[in-house]
Image: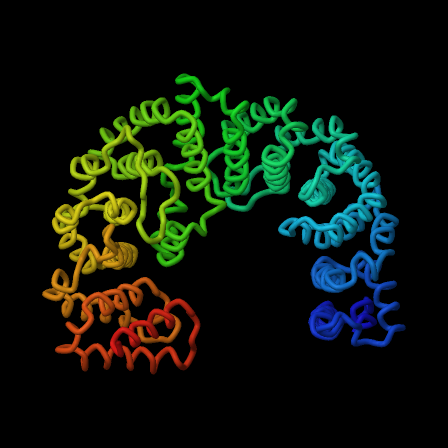
Length: 581
């Protein structure tokens, strides 16, 4: 297979097929469960001897497959049974050919990044020290080489991109080498490394302008730098502290200069993560303790990144289930909104009164604009949600502790409730904002307040908008799950039995709207709501048992053909279990 991969006269598709087959073969046939080789010793030696060189000389599509194969071998063999690999990689680094250098760095990063989530152990430090003894000095030298090559290729787009890719890989390896402890080789060259990092945080080149959606190599490098800075702030603050102000100012300038285009999304997220880390260290957080500075932060950093963009509205309309998962489940960890919220909440932890007062001025301003601009009102509600909640929104109770300087019930009644109740003339996203407000602060409302809000909430299940009726189902399910201090459900069987039949019937209609297997089981939130209603009403389901069972059997017959959403059929199974009980 490797001979086919290496044979240049053969079609690229054929060589790629061989590379894929080789990688998959290595995955299953390299070692057995005990770690012993399943191949003859001479083949093992030949593969190790030839694979790195072949990978580096191959086209990019083949490089990625062979690089994965090397990582798979390294998982079992590196470093004790493949102690020549690091030296082999170092010997192939090229100061003039970025293609070769990038191939080497890809392999190195794929091996070293395995250290990031690992717990400390003697074996781990032995491996890292082995790598540092061979790779450390060449790594520092390559940073300088690549920096010079970027300067030399500033007018050559292809060369500039290639060397920026190399810089990105070097920054990621910088993170890999530092993820467990500060390496001596980096500590002794920290001044040089800091100079390079600061340089590329502010680097611009018109050759990379134009594309609004795809991040260019420049944004990628800047995002990689911010991620490494976050590590150093949280893990090595004593060593990093002398440079913290320089980097904070550089990242602040960076955030102030980028636009709302999607190409900057990851960069903005990583930059905000760094500022959040800075705000977590008391001696650095003190620099934010000024009302004028806080106003600048909210105006120039928070507001531009929590405001709705066209891409958010497009996601809401075109991929509603993805919008819900990102917004509700935290899979938007690299989004601007999430990163800006995390930064604001960290500042709130440190300076609760000042942040509340500053942000509330902007909330009131956007609420006044919201009378004629629903997007402005969305921004106001989002800002309020960000400062009102202390800690995380828990799955069981929602927000458990609120900011003492705000009144969540009063704000809801004055500014949010009308969007929940109104039958028409309200934007779907505004409806979602109102439902999400109830969902987040569900444990802050009394049963009487919930009884007033529950019927309007159920009414939104009849919306024609996918996100609106799904959010309504999510909120209904979570309220039915809510328990009082004595462990009893807030809403008992007696509370929901009068409308349970109509509620379940409507939920089944929504689930069965599209009976193709993939679409029917797409929305697990609806099935979870069905499950919860059945659990709460207990024996009250008996009069409609046949109807409910028929729906569940119909769904079973559809999804058994192609079960694709484990959460959906888990809730489906639990719904049947509730009937059995």
